[in-house]
Structure formats: C-alpha cells, structure tokens
Amino acid sequence: MRFLSLLLLIPTLVWAEPATVVRATELKREPATDAATVAQLAENATVDALERQGGWTRVKAGANEGWVKMLALRYGGSAKSGDSGLQQAFNVARSGSSGTQVTTGVRGLDETQLANARPNPAELAKLNGFAADRGGASAFASQGKLMPAAVAYPE
Amino acid sequence: MIRFLVLMMIAGSANAQFRLPSFDINKAIDTVKNVNKAVREPDESEEIALGQDVAARLLGAAPLAADARLQQYVNRVGRWLALQTERPDLPWKFGVMEAPQVNAFAVPGGTVFVTRGLVQKMQSEAELAGVLSHEIVHVLKKHHLKAIQKGAMTQLSADAAGAALSSRGGNSEVRNKLISFGTEMYARGLDKSDELEADRLGVVVAARGGYDAYGLPAVLQTLQAMNAADSALALMFKTHPAPAERLDALGRMQSLLDAYSAQPQLRERFAAETKH
View 1 (cartoon, each protein chain N blue to C red):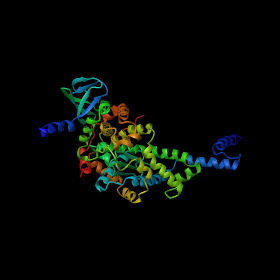
View 2: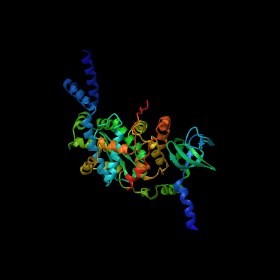
View 3: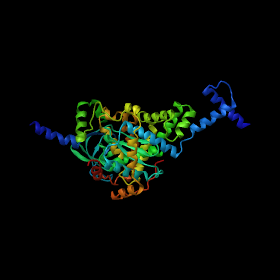
View 4: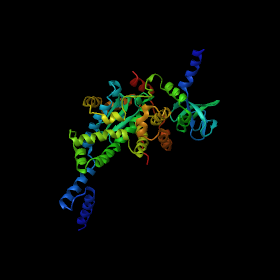
C-alpha cells in the first residue's frame, strides 16, 4: 500500500511543477498565438507546468490542458508564503539524483571563501589550456546545426 | 589665463581633498597628473592581465571541475558566442568550477566561470548559452572592470590605484590589495542596472549564436522555482536582482525572444557532454 501511494506520488512531483499565471492569459490548444483558445486563465490562477517548448509551456489548469506563454508563469513565488514542508519536498524531488540539493553547510564558493582566496596558478594554467580557438568553436557550432543570426541589440 | 584659472580650481579642490598644508603649484600639478592616471581606463592588455590575476584568486576559492570533456565543451560553446560580439578576439576562456553553489562569474578580459551547481540545474545547451551570454556581456561592457576601478580609487590613493591598475601582474602589496578587492567584488555584486543590461543583451548574443533565445529565461525560471532559502543560492541571490524581477524585465523583449525561439536547444548534446 505504501509502495503504491509512493508510485502515485512520483509522477506528480517529477513531471508537474506548480506555477502561477502573472496576468490573465489564454490557454491555447497548440504552442502558437493563432491556435484555438481552450480556456481563459485569470490572473494568479494556479496551474501545473508540464514541459516547455520555445516560448511556450504546456500546463494543466484544472480539467483543461494546453499551452501558455512561458513568461506568463512564475514558480514558487506566491506559493512561497505558506511553503516550507511541501516546498522542501518538492525541491528535493525536483533536483532528483543530481545531489546538489543542499540546505545547510554548503562548502565551496561563498563569501568567506572569496574573501580568503589565495591565487591558484596551477588551476589558472589548466583554465588557459582548455581555451577553444575560432576554428574549433565554429566547427562545433556547425555540428550542432547552429546558424548565426544577425540580431541587433535592443535600444 | 583661463588655463591658469582652471588649474587654480583643480588645485583648490585637490587641496581640500588631500589636505595639502599650503598651496604649492608643483604639488598641485602632480596631483592633477595622478588623478588623470587613476581615471584613465586600463587598456586592453592591462584589462587582460588584471583578469588573469583575479581569475587565479577565484580558482583559489574553488578549483576547476576535473572533467576535461566538460571544460572543452563550455569553451567551444562560449567561444562561439563570443565570436558573435564586438570583442571576438579577446583571449576568451570558460571554466566550470567545482562548487555546489549556483552561480556564474565574468572576469575582465574574457574569462567566464560557471559553477557545477548551476550546470546541473540546466537542461539544454541553449540554457548554458543563455548564462554564458549574460556573463560575456559583463565582459563586453566592462562592468566588473569599471567597478574595480571605481573601488580602487576609494580604497587606495589615486597614485597607488593608477599604478596598481596599470602594472601587469607582479606581487606588489598594492597590486595584491587591488586583486583582493577585485575578487571580493564577486561577493558584493554589481549595480542592478548592469545585471539587467547583461540579461537584455545576453539573450541577443545567444540568439546570434543560433540558439533558442529562451535559454536564459528558462534558467531564471528554474532558479525562481527553487527554494529561495537554499544556501546554494545565497550568494547568487544576494548579488543579483530576484529572478522574478529579471523575468519581468525580459518580458519587455518578448517579440525578439519569440522571433528566435525555434532555434535549436541541443538538449541531447548538452546531456552527452555534461553527464557522461
């Protein structure tokens, strides 16, 4: 029984992230502005985010499922006031096996270590040794089918 | 005559600032020269030398992740992005630091660090590109260099600051002071406007590189979904505007983001290169 309830819990925790809609938003059938509208979501409506595709996120909103603009979603934020227990469990589940979910006594790069750092010339030499040249970087981009685009900086 | 008057005025303010016992025209001229020396922005070779000294310190706080494939990967992605900018030929170097904290740092002269803790939170090369592009913009705009320069002039005398900024490497006491200050700046953070500018221009650099422009916003959403009290986020949250505020600001660039949202994310390549 315990095993069964655990099984039921896992997909929800791993695949859906609770989120809030920051403004009134249309829930679309497809990830496109001209797609059919499934439902109107009110400002602050809560949804479960399922996956992202470009600027769109697939969500479950009550009985409906569809796509909303990714930037219309905020995670944790408003739910955070009453969080702790649940939020903690959620975060631990979220980071999965990465092992980086650390809540206390983190070692590594913090203020104290920055203040007390001594130069490490051996690591600097390693860093310099890993540098990529123009040709290597461009060939790797081609392998990934990355096409440079002419995009102007915003004003 | 006007020139003399101007000199008198400068000398007057210098006199007040440095509490010179009495007016001395030669001393006043020296002071003016020193102020000029400190105000002058380090040239590119000085910027690079300063960056190497600061990078060596940062690596003293956390070493590189012992994973040559991962290090070469971030260098290829980062250099490709840097090639799309107005400073393509800086000696760009990218490194993954072995630290569980979630953070990234830009060092003057073209060095960019990202922590293993942050890489583990990412899901695609487009997300990595978004973060690297943000840091690349800090280098392009000399945000840290200017902050170090400004700090040096309040911490050191104008004379010493000028000398320390322009010396290439070396171990003088004043140079060490400058580098310590430069390193600790990563615990204090930049102006909020610098961070928001790096976000704005960063998504453009990633889009120029051919990546899905939503990479950086996606990372910011991941950070926003994490527990804000998580100590792995403490330094990053202290030194940056809140993710929600950064996402709100990027919301004003939605049409640009949408125009380049169908470009590759390279999830599989990212997984292969970072989780082997």
